[in-house]
Length: 124
Image 1 (tube, rainbow, N blue to C red):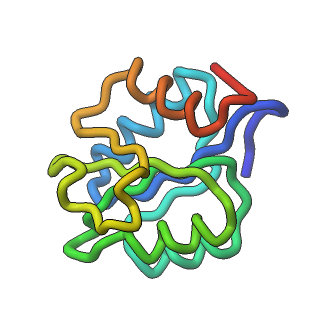
Image 2: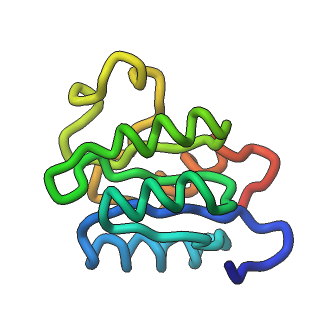
């Protein structure tokens, strides 16, 4: 991972390369660091279990597979996260009903707000 001291490192889990790029550039423009990225469930699970980052942004649907196992790992590790989806919070299992949800398409102010809420010690 390559990011500035004191910045928030974000793990992005997103299956659409174009959206991944936009989200990564948006985070960087706000002063956050992209620590890890994953497009498929197996790599997301591996990185969620073993890598260091401060917060995560999880696309709910990864090539037809739910990202909920990744969310479960993050809960176990105590790492805050937000679900990103175009389908709204209604699709979330009961155990994630209180988890923040950010609807696509993303807006810079929404990204900044949610990261600040997830990691209040640091704001961009």
